[in-house]
Length: 197
Image 1: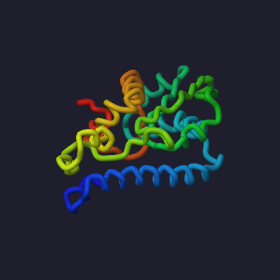
Image 2 (image 1 turned 120 degrees about the vertical axis):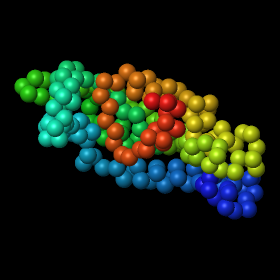
Image 3 (image 1 turned 45 degrees about the horizontal axis):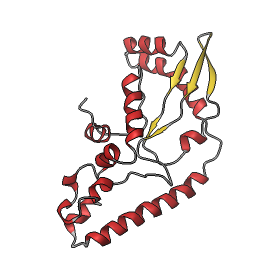
Image 4 (image 1 turned 90 degrees about the horizontal axis):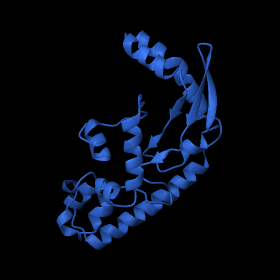
């Protein structure tokens, strides 16, 4: 979207209207897709499988020290937090139980699933969609208010989703173990979280 503003003669008002329409259309489409979600997949099952497989996979790749660290943390009551950039309620829908027991090496481990944190907003509520910074679009042709919505960092820190971002950062900072699902570049991580680490 940002590149389009450099490559074409555009009218800022028309672009802003199209941007708003895009968010509305994306919202409607994702609501339809979200409605197709069945019950055949369970986050509980995936977490249970993770408890059983992570140490084995680390040992097989020669990461014995990391395996021991993981074993220590995953052998005690565990809170599982979710930070998602997905607009849908897929994570919520695939949670079978908020608390469940994993039987690990003969020990029963209590797992508490926490409510997901939606950093980029949710369907029908504060969806964040845009560019990473003002160099990625022809900012000089737009009024001063437009970047608040179109630049993700401004939207996340100064606008409607600042609370979700703060919660996500607290969870990340206080976590002992972090698993990432999906691809994310280092530069993109920094722009999303606003951190230098």
